[in-house]
Image (cartoon, rainbow, N blue to C red; front, side, top):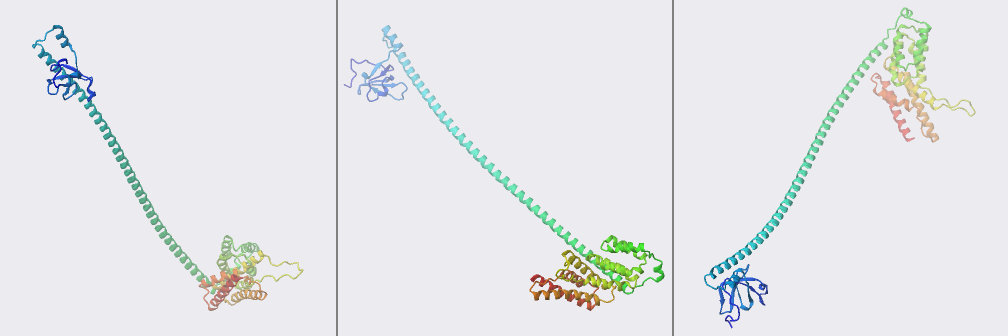
Length: 432
């Protein structure tokens, strides 16, 4: 009806009530409230109440409110007193309680809100810390990677510098070594040139001595030792003429001996001595000494040397003959004797022991004709040319081309002829 029912309980401002039976706001059912100072709104037929913990008032019909009996209400009921002098303090107490309850609710809400904000702040702080940690870790890793790259680059630079320094050092060492090698080569060449010049000068002096030989007189020879014992000792040394120690001892002993009765034997021993090419010049010195001592030595020496220089291989054995053909070792020994004998002949011409190169040139011609004849015979029979004297002629060509003492036109002509024969032999041998 809009007016408060006479049968409904009448509520005073500040009284505690409980809300119930609401259909539109069921969440307020059972909630304690307090009647406000506005009391009952007759136009709406509702009490203005403020739910505990709420911030605003609501209008509730009387039938949806139930009184809440507290201690003060019980005291009022027991005393039966309803004087106005007691109600104001009681109303004030109710208001204070309502405000306290509201404050408690606000405090709880504030505390919950603060806790929520603190939790959110803590979570945000943790997130920020995590991001900062991740960023710091990433920055540290980046810095570490950059430092590692910088260290690697520095190490590569150091290694490159070491390689460059080692290269420069090796290059400098190679340059110094090359300069030292060139200097040593130049010094060695100069030493060889000086040695060759000294040797040439010595041979020129030897040639002059041999060309104008001043032989000892008969009386001077008789004053020397001519015993057979001394000759036998000298002959044993002659057999070993290729031995430098024996040859040196013999050269030192010859000026004290008188070998006038054994000149031919000495000449034959020299011609048959197993000489190597390096022994030819010292052997020529010994022959020079014999030439300047004994006038008949050169005449006795030349024939056996010519024979050795032109020695032919034995003829093939006749069928049924007991004599075997020349073996490889015999052939090698014969060619070595030919080579050293031919060289010694021209060395004796160079140092003035042999007065004329005619017979040595004839021996050289015979050696070349021997190969020419054998090559022609092989050509007729369709066999390869043997050129058996090739190892005799080739060393002689080198010697004759470089020997300054073989300066006579016949000697040069012989050297040129030998060179031509040697080249031809080499080509034919190559074709064979």
